[in-house]
Image (cartoon, rainbow, N blue to C red; front, side, top):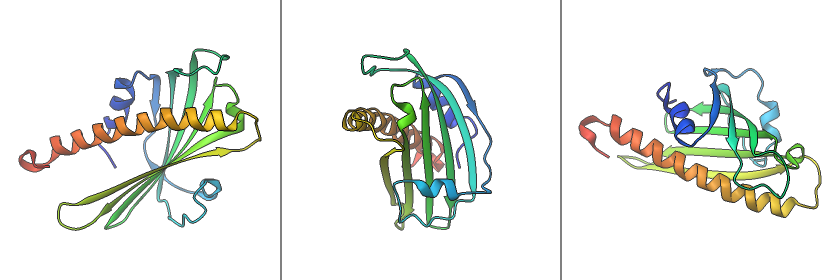
Length: 168
Protein backbone atom coordinates (compact mmCIF):
# COMPACT_ATOMS: atom_id res chain seq x y z
CA UNK A 1 0.00 0.00 0.00
CA UNK A 2 2.79 2.41 0.79
CA UNK A 3 6.55 2.46 1.08
CA UNK A 4 7.52 0.45 4.18
CA UNK A 5 8.55 3.45 6.24
CA UNK A 6 5.99 6.05 5.09
CA UNK A 7 3.42 5.63 7.87
CA UNK A 8 6.06 5.25 10.60
CA UNK A 9 7.84 8.37 9.34
CA UNK A 10 4.58 10.35 9.35
CA UNK A 11 3.80 9.22 12.91
CA UNK A 12 7.30 10.20 14.06
CA UNK A 13 7.02 13.59 12.33
CA UNK A 14 3.68 14.05 14.13
CA UNK A 15 5.39 13.62 17.50
CA UNK A 16 4.27 10.05 18.27
CA UNK A 17 6.54 7.86 20.43
CA UNK A 18 7.13 4.12 20.96
CA UNK A 19 5.75 3.32 17.48
CA UNK A 20 5.18 -0.28 16.40
CA UNK A 21 3.97 -0.90 12.84
CA UNK A 22 3.10 -4.48 11.93
CA UNK A 23 3.46 -5.75 8.38
CA UNK A 24 0.28 -6.15 6.33
CA UNK A 25 -1.18 -9.65 6.69
CA UNK A 26 -4.03 -11.47 5.02
CA UNK A 27 -7.30 -10.44 6.69
CA UNK A 28 -8.86 -13.58 8.13
CA UNK A 29 -11.88 -12.19 9.97
CA UNK A 30 -13.48 -8.87 9.09
CA UNK A 31 -16.78 -9.27 10.97
CA UNK A 32 -15.58 -7.04 13.83
CA UNK A 33 -14.96 -4.21 11.34
CA UNK A 34 -18.55 -4.41 10.22
CA UNK A 35 -19.61 -3.04 13.62
CA UNK A 36 -18.56 0.42 12.39
CA UNK A 37 -20.65 3.43 11.52
CA UNK A 38 -20.68 2.46 7.86
CA UNK A 39 -23.50 -0.05 7.87
CA UNK A 40 -23.59 0.10 4.07
CA UNK A 41 -19.92 -0.92 3.78
CA UNK A 42 -19.74 -4.21 1.90
CA UNK A 43 -16.04 -3.91 1.08
CA UNK A 44 -14.18 -7.23 1.17
CA UNK A 45 -10.96 -6.34 2.94
CA UNK A 46 -7.95 -8.43 1.95
CA UNK A 47 -5.28 -7.21 4.37
CA UNK A 48 -4.99 -6.09 7.97
CA UNK A 49 -2.31 -4.65 10.26
CA UNK A 50 -2.00 -3.13 13.72
CA UNK A 51 -0.11 -0.03 14.72
CA UNK A 52 0.50 1.10 18.29
CA UNK A 53 2.06 4.28 19.61
CA UNK A 54 2.00 6.87 22.39
CA UNK A 55 0.74 10.39 21.87
CA UNK A 56 0.92 13.49 24.00
CA UNK A 57 -2.63 14.62 24.62
CA UNK A 58 -3.58 18.13 23.53
CA UNK A 59 -7.07 18.09 25.06
CA UNK A 60 -7.34 16.85 28.62
CA UNK A 61 -11.03 17.22 29.55
CA UNK A 62 -9.64 18.29 32.93
CA UNK A 63 -8.50 14.78 33.85
CA UNK A 64 -6.25 11.89 32.90
CA UNK A 65 -2.58 11.37 32.13
CA UNK A 66 -0.76 13.60 29.61
CA UNK A 67 0.19 10.61 27.41
CA UNK A 68 -2.24 8.15 25.80
CA UNK A 69 -1.68 4.70 24.29
CA UNK A 70 -3.20 4.31 20.83
CA UNK A 71 -3.95 1.16 18.84
CA UNK A 72 -4.95 1.49 15.20
CA UNK A 73 -6.19 -1.50 13.26
CA UNK A 74 -6.06 -0.96 9.50
CA UNK A 75 -7.99 -3.02 6.94
CA UNK A 76 -7.31 -2.56 3.23
CA UNK A 77 -8.95 -3.43 -0.06
CA UNK A 78 -7.38 -2.69 -3.42
CA UNK A 79 -9.12 -3.24 -6.72
CA UNK A 80 -8.36 -1.99 -10.22
CA UNK A 81 -10.02 1.40 -9.69
CA UNK A 82 -10.39 1.74 -5.92
CA UNK A 83 -8.37 1.58 -2.71
CA UNK A 84 -10.16 1.55 0.65
CA UNK A 85 -8.41 1.75 4.01
CA UNK A 86 -10.59 1.40 7.10
CA UNK A 87 -9.10 2.29 10.48
CA UNK A 88 -10.40 1.49 13.92
CA UNK A 89 -8.72 3.58 16.59
CA UNK A 90 -8.79 2.62 20.26
CA UNK A 91 -7.17 4.63 23.03
CA UNK A 92 -6.12 4.13 26.62
CA UNK A 93 -5.28 7.01 28.94
CA UNK A 94 -8.00 9.32 27.67
CA UNK A 95 -11.04 9.98 29.85
CA UNK A 96 -14.01 7.83 28.83
CA UNK A 97 -11.89 5.97 26.25
CA UNK A 98 -13.71 2.78 27.22
CA UNK A 99 -16.94 4.37 25.94
CA UNK A 100 -15.94 4.88 22.31
CA UNK A 101 -13.60 4.14 19.44
CA UNK A 102 -13.01 5.92 16.17
CA UNK A 103 -13.77 4.56 12.73
CA UNK A 104 -12.02 6.26 9.83
CA UNK A 105 -12.49 5.26 6.21
CA UNK A 106 -10.31 6.55 3.38
CA UNK A 107 -11.33 5.80 -0.21
CA UNK A 108 -9.21 6.63 -3.26
CA UNK A 109 -10.96 6.16 -6.60
CA UNK A 110 -9.45 6.37 -10.08
CA UNK A 111 -11.65 8.83 -11.95
CA UNK A 112 -9.81 8.44 -15.24
CA UNK A 113 -6.73 10.03 -16.71
CA UNK A 114 -4.64 11.57 -13.98
CA UNK A 115 -7.61 12.23 -11.69
CA UNK A 116 -7.89 10.60 -8.30
CA UNK A 117 -10.89 11.10 -6.02
CA UNK A 118 -10.21 11.00 -2.27
CA UNK A 119 -12.93 10.64 0.37
CA UNK A 120 -12.26 10.49 4.11
CA UNK A 121 -14.95 9.86 6.69
CA UNK A 122 -14.95 9.75 10.49
CA UNK A 123 -17.41 8.08 12.82
CA UNK A 124 -17.17 8.29 16.61
CA UNK A 125 -18.53 4.89 17.62
CA UNK A 126 -19.99 4.98 21.15
CA UNK A 127 -19.85 1.57 22.78
CA UNK A 128 -21.29 2.84 26.07
CA UNK A 129 -23.48 5.83 26.78
CA UNK A 130 -21.91 8.88 28.37
CA UNK A 131 -23.17 12.35 29.20
CA UNK A 132 -20.03 13.78 27.59
CA UNK A 133 -20.73 12.26 24.16
CA UNK A 134 -21.07 15.61 22.37
CA UNK A 135 -17.85 16.93 23.97
CA UNK A 136 -16.01 13.72 23.06
CA UNK A 137 -17.39 13.80 19.50
CA UNK A 138 -16.43 17.45 18.89
CA UNK A 139 -12.94 17.17 20.42
CA UNK A 140 -12.22 13.90 18.65
CA UNK A 141 -13.48 15.21 15.31
CA UNK A 142 -11.30 18.32 15.61
CA UNK A 143 -8.14 16.37 16.46
CA UNK A 144 -8.76 13.61 13.91
CA UNK A 145 -9.50 16.09 11.10
CA UNK A 146 -6.20 17.85 11.77
CA UNK A 147 -4.32 14.52 11.75
CA UNK A 148 -6.02 13.31 8.55
CA UNK A 149 -5.17 16.56 6.74
CA UNK A 150 -1.55 16.16 7.81
CA UNK A 151 -1.52 12.54 6.57
CA UNK A 152 -3.09 13.50 3.23
CA UNK A 153 -0.51 16.24 2.70
CA UNK A 154 2.33 13.83 3.53
CA UNK A 155 0.87 11.21 1.15
CA UNK A 156 0.52 13.76 -1.66
CA UNK A 157 4.10 14.95 -1.11
CA UNK A 158 5.27 11.31 -1.25
CA UNK A 159 3.31 10.67 -4.48
CA UNK A 160 4.82 13.75 -6.13
CA UNK A 161 8.29 12.67 -5.03
CA UNK A 162 7.77 9.16 -6.47
CA UNK A 163 6.07 10.27 -9.70
CA UNK A 164 8.08 9.88 -12.91
CA UNK A 165 9.77 13.20 -13.79
CA UNK A 166 8.27 14.79 -10.67
CA UNK A 167 4.84 15.13 -12.32
CA UNK A 168 1.79 15.71 -10.18
